[in-house]
Each structure stands twice: as structure tokens, then as C-alpha cells.
Amino acid sequence: MNHRELISRQLDLFAEDEGDLLAEVYELRERYNRADRDEAEEAYGDYADAVESVKETLADMRDAFAATLDDAEEYERAFEAAARKRWRWLDDG
Image 1 (cartoon, rainbow, N blue to C red):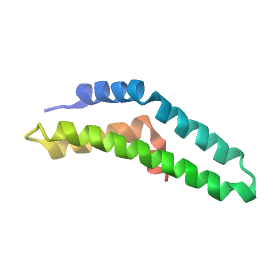
Image 2: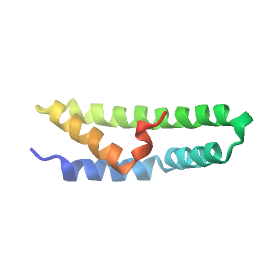
Image 3: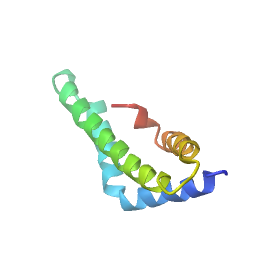
């Protein structure tokens, strides 16, 4: 079963429902990028925490749906790949 279209819809819904969380990630990344040496470590920590929050929220979404499937592992791999392709910064933090 190809989950591509379903996952795309799920990620669109996530972006809509969690727009504030995603905006926070972008704002904190910009703050980190502009931070001087004295502020960079704290700014990066804040950014990494926001990225982790997105990862956890996405994982909850993924796991809730995967629990309804017979081929959960295939879906989970496809979901992770699609999320990382859409938000490349998920590998940060």
C-alpha cells in the first residue's frame, strides 16, 4: 500500500493545526542564526527544544494512525521520510 497521499494530507493538517509551533521553530532558528557568540548556545538550545516538540507531536500523530494499520512499519518509514523532506530541520536538534 502506498501511503504517500495520506501522509501528505496528514502533514498538511499538522501544518495547519500546529502552525504556531512551526512558526516558533522558524523564529528560534533565526534568533540562533543572528545570535552573537555569547548568546548562541542558549539560542541553539531553545531552537533544539522547539524542534524536539515538533518531533514529539509528529510522532504522536504517526503512532496514533500506525496503530490502526497492518503494515505499520512501512507507514512509519514513509511518514518519517515525508516529514523530513518537508521540514529538513527535523534532523537538527
